[in-house]
Amino acid sequence: MAADLYQLDGSETERLTRLVREARSRGWWHDYTDVVPAGSATFYGLEDGAARVSHHSVGLIPGLFQTAAYARSLVASVSGVSKDTMERRVALRMRRQLLLQRPNPPATTVLLDEAVLHRRIGGSVVMCDQLRHLLDLSQRSAVDLRVVPFSAGAYSPAGVGFTVFEFNAVGVTPVVFTEHLSRNTFIDEPDEVAVYRSSIVDGGVAALDAVGSRALITERIEALH
Image 1 (cartoon, rainbow, N blue to C red):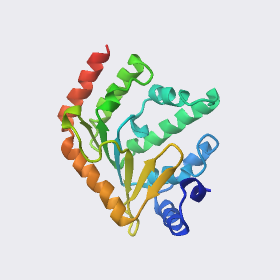
Image 2: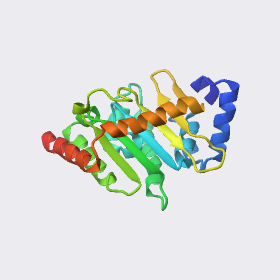
Image 3: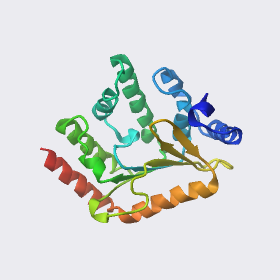
Image 4: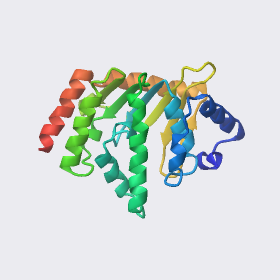
């Protein structure tokens, strides 16, 4: 059960269940439940129904922005994963990205620690293609993609990766998702959510603007050749 996986109490489970039901759930992800952890439908339902998605990443390109080759390299690094499972997980990730192609896609903010650009997932060729993909996505009107450079030093929320989902539906409050090695956590308590939303704003202050971010990504592509 999702409550067991995410270690939620009864009230938290009820709130998340309501959020998923009230989100614009399409349920397509149920075709992939055999290759993802139990309870993953909660995350996919929130992502699919969100009006705004804000993500801060400290180590990897977020799933919504990954190329198939980059995603495949990540999945292949997990021991004990069969080739069929690997390809279905990659297919799931690519299917998630269709929400960015909707007529009215969610407003998506992505803050990348510069370290993400330096982690050479899949080798130079895969990484170059991935970085070019970031450049393409950064040109979309619904996407705000910026990089926090090493020169920024310490900043909030340095070292903490998380996603904030926000909704247009009346009565549906924002939800924060954080990922850990042993479990994942959903947070919807207003005071806690406010901390993460504020951190996104603070991280944006430390980040380069869109033009500077694209320049830094281009610099990394050139360095990989």
